[in-house]
Image 1: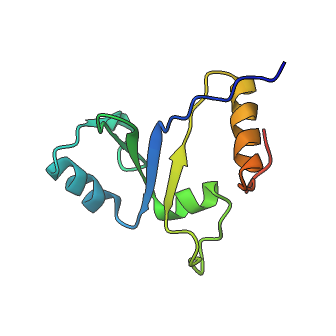
Image 2 (image 1 turned 135 degrees about the horizontal axis):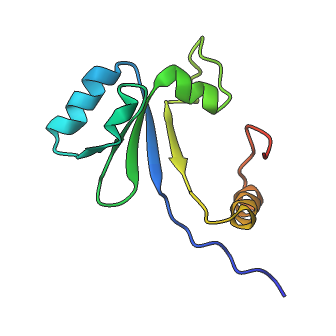
Length: 110
């Protein structure tokens, strides 16, 4: 019996930004509610009514995506999408699905 396909859902849209203070102020000015303020300017999470909007310093997001910080690559614009899963098995299923559709892993599975 073949396993059921994972349910598609985006839970986080992460933006790499050059200036955290200015970016946080911008999204707050647009009316987005910031959560988890204890992180200071290390990361900022905003409610959007759907996926969470997360702001990270550009260099940290690039490092997480295993992209060199300098020179800034043309193909990485400082944005990632997160698909959170409820189990390790679901993570494997989502990765297998993405790879079968043409994605490639930038970092080894943990």
